[in-house]
Amino acid sequence: MLKLRLKRCGRKAVYRIVAIDVRSRREGKDLQKVGFYDPITNQTYLNVPAILYFLERGAQLTGTVQDLFKKAWDFKELRPNQSQFN
Image (cartoon, rainbow, N blue to C red; front, side, top):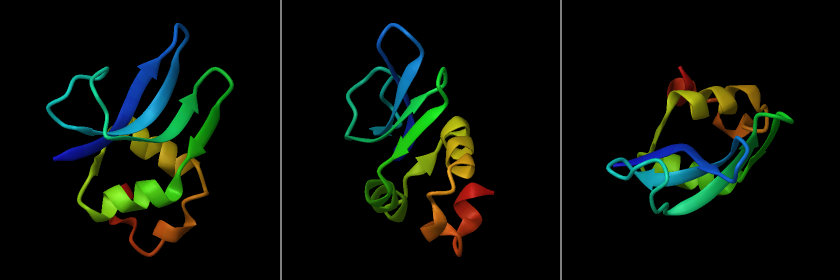
C-alpha cells in the first residue's frame, strides 16, 4: 500500500511530499517526489498530475499532507470527489 507523506530533508525543517510504501521509514526510499513544503516560509509546491496519479491508484494521505492539500486551493480538480479529504 502507498501513502503520500512528508519526508524531511536538509538541516532545517524542510519537507518533500513523497509517494512511499507504508512499510518504509520516514527517511526511506521513495517512489516519486510529488511536492515540497517549507513550514518556515509557509511555501507549498504540489505536482498535481503526479498526486492525482497516485490517488487514483489507491494511495492514502497522512493527516499532515491532507491538511496541506486542504490549504492549497490548487486542488480544484478534486472538488467533486472530496471523500479523500474528509
